[in-house]
Amino acid sequence: VRAVLSLASVFGPAAWIEGVVSMIHATRSSPQAVSAPWADDSVVDWVDDVLERACEQGLVGFHERSALDGLREFAFTMRADRQLIYEEIPAKEKALHHRLAAQWFGGLDLRDPTPWYEVVAEHLELGGRGERAAQWFTRAGRAARVAYDMSRAQTLYRRALALVDLDRIDLLMPVLEGFGEAHYHAGEFTTARRAYGALLEASLIGDDRRVGARAWLMLGRCHRALGDYKEARACFDYALGLFKEDRDSAGIADALDQTARLLRIEGSGSAYDEA
Image 1 (tube, rainbow, N blue to C red):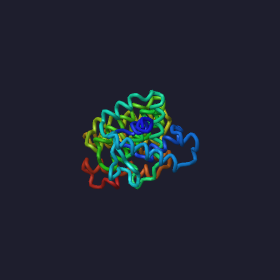
Image 2: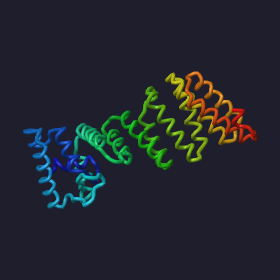
Image 3: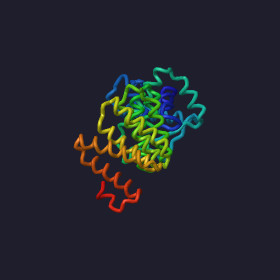
Image 4: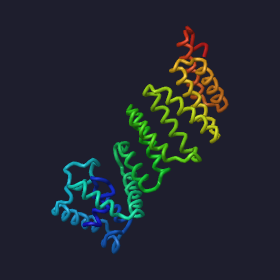
């Protein structure tokens, strides 16, 4: 019982039988998995029996409905029991189990996987895979932005930033861009401007002209929102020049559109013609 509950504790207060079985196969941590690792049914039956005993002992309870459709969910009856079992797992083994949990969640065929991006990220972080965790936190942040939950998006991007080393510019740039966008769309233009400034610096270090062009465009939007129209126009001009060098027609159109909006704010009656 303790071996199964130890694996289950890694998932949190609630776990899924299929996830525990997946871990057992990956670690061969049951007699059935060791003697016949290809015999899925025997391991599933063994886990079922173990959890039934744990349920009879009042350690876990089964949920009628699962947060993961089609999978069987159960939970520890007492959070203190789960915490005690979890804390007794050796650190190296615990990190491995978190990586396996992340792998299991990431491999599920879900109708809407976006609510689970943060869960995968947290397991990767606890499993010692900071850079991969940052990528999943970035995915989660992007999903929160699409849902217009900017406060949550900011938190997720901030968690991603904490995990990315400055020498990984390729990972840093999408985090900075998302972080800036989350603040911009929340009306926090000063913070967004700082993020876009950092993105511009990162694009120069990474020699990524396309990202640099977007950074100039975003900086221009912030200056315009803050009423600094001269700086905004200069940023849009820089962005337009870079987009033209890259022959990026979509980027050129965006830069011209942003310039026209600025001219209209400044009182030009023929803003789009001038742009």
